[in-house]
Image 1 (tube, rainbow, N blue to C red):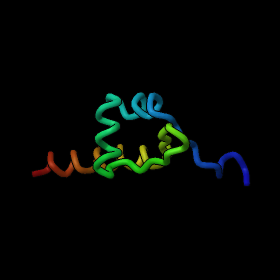
Image 2: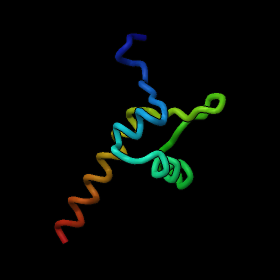
Image 3: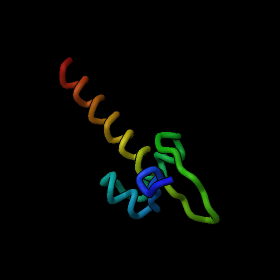
Image 4: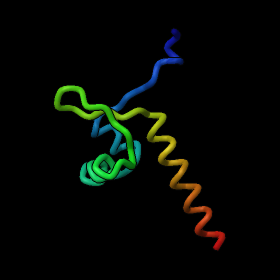
Length: 68
């Protein structure tokens, strides 16, 4: 498997930076099943691909609302 095939994971602070949200909002996303995560020990990790999908879905929903 090449490095390109490996999934990239980020911790809480990096995920907040990428999504431009607060730690509390990130916790809400976890609690409500909006953003999948993995818990390793006491730390949460998020796939970059899941965060990109969340961003794209949010943009798509915003575009659809603007058409109405």
